[in-house]
Every structure is written in C-alpha cells, then in structure tokens.
Image (cartoon, rainbow, N blue to C red):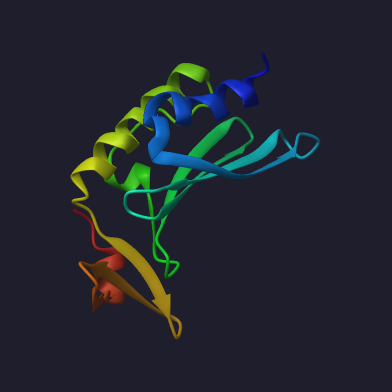
Length: 131
C-alpha cells in the first residue's frame, strides 16, 4: 500500500462513520503534492489534509469558509510519515469532539475571529504581536 492510501485510511480508521470522503487530488510530479478532503458529519466541517514537499497540514473549514489550521490549535510533527499523520488525525478528532476552538474568516480584506457564530475583528497589531 502506498503512502497516500495509508494516509487516506487514517481518517476513517480514526473517525469511523463520523466522516465521509469528498475528494482526492494527486499531482506527484509537483514535489509530491496531494490533497484529501473529508466531511466531519457531527459538526459539518470539511477536513482537508494537504501535502507538499514532504510536509502536511490539516485545515478545518466550516460552511461559511471560515478556517483554522490544526497546527495553530495543537502542535504535531508535520513531516509526511504515516505515524505522524495518524497522530495528527487523532489530535484532530480529540479537538473536534471538544469543539472548543475558533475559526478565522476574511471579509472585505479584513480578518475576523469567528467564535460561536460571533465575529470579532483581528487588528493588525494582534496578528504580529509576540507572545
């Protein structure tokens, strides 16, 4: 079984019947690029795993297009290896079950935090502020 298939199976193996497969894009001649997309049924979020040049990311997207990268919520090793993907998908499941995070959305070239269907403008100084 090739790596893309193992990665694609990590989602249903972890989430069971709570997700369904939407699409897959594979363009290996472009630095090994691929994308897999699922729908998380309980919250109606799209879950997108994107791989490029041996590094992957997982994006959570709601029905309005508001999004959040898993790495911004919970850190994981993003090197594209089967065990790293499985670990990240498990962390994703834990976070989605808690449903205790916020999204970002852009409206009119302005960035907003979306928290419980409320929008709060993110000021430029907040974006670049160091913690």
